[in-house]
Length: 274
Image (cartoon, rainbow, N blue to C red; front, side, top):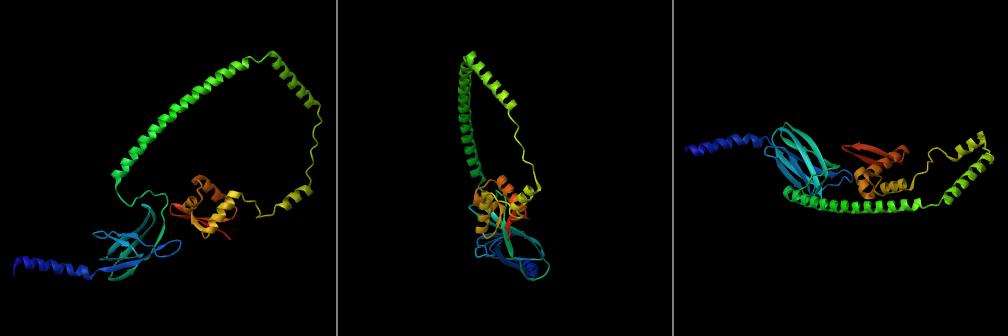
């Protein structure tokens, strides 16, 4: 037998067990909020070589030999990572493994879908140059405003010095008269605090009837319109409220028992109570 054919035959024979022992990993990718299949998600598995699958209809599938693997699913919107999920899979036998993935929102990430960093860096440099130019104009404007304020202060000080002694004396007499009048005025009688007044005040404010500020009411209404459950990041995007202020508002609503804050990864999920 020709040595070349014999070597090819040995390679084919050695490859048969690896194909025979392959397992099938498949599943469906769901969105965490609606639990509907998420289309066009990108799924990767750290096999050798690494495999990547674009789940156009929300379903993915991989064929791998025995081993310990990590599935990573990502979903991009407007070229930025919005949802992701990671699952570990142990394959120690042949067969079909069904691993469904639930995509949760990715909080405070800057990961991009494309890797044209040279273009991005160039854009950043242009933006930085523009900002530096704007800063120079702002500094020059502030310097002119400061000079104008100094001139106004100088002329105002000179005008104050021209105040006549008669005006100063009149001001002193008026101040003295006010002091004398306040000294002879009768002190205001303080109304004693009685138990009846205290009980009346307590009766008007029943437990659980704390008045909610209008901005907190609007936040509750926005949360109700979106099904009573949103991530804090989505709530900030829908309301346009700053991150620090929104955190304080959520904390206040949670203390009033109106919402519940659930920790999820690096962010929070806000759930409407009642």
